[in-house]
Length: 210
Image (cartoon, rainbow, N blue to C red; front, side, top):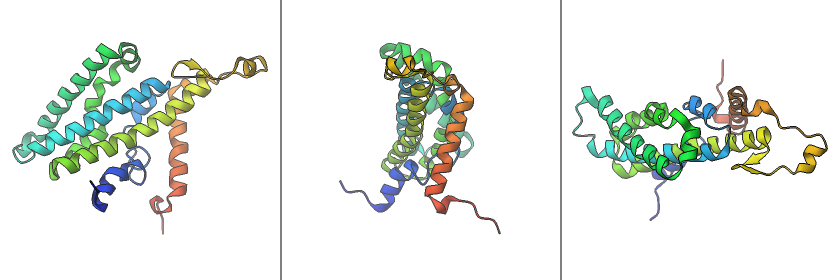
């Protein structure tokens, strides 16, 4: 099924020009906390994408029946239910990763990207468009986490997905892992570099002053 230009913008926009982290500067806290290794970063990215997509669909289906005064409560209930399901699945099938993610799976409920999409998009659009918006924003958030997890684990621990990738000969020659890479401040610095590169390539996103 061919996608219209508007639908493509909804799905693909968050991957670049409207990225929730690089442009909107949302979801920074979790991106600092779960990206010291690649595996939990990937799992977190998938979890947020699933919750955002299906949360958008459910709220979109209910949007005409939700009283305005309790809409936030309804959104929280829907999201909390989805997060609970995701958390239980992780405990059952990826327990070690779930332990690495710690409380941050549960804190998806308060992720400002997720709540922002429910409030700004799902309440005013149909289920299909809302689903694509959730997928797009989840993937836009997720690829940043994967990039951060890749470089932080590689340079900080010399491994990827827990497997050693830097040859022992490098260490014998004097190479040392950069312990700073696995600390949250370095994640913040890497995000700043990604934002700088992104703004440099997208001149229209740069702020101008008179």
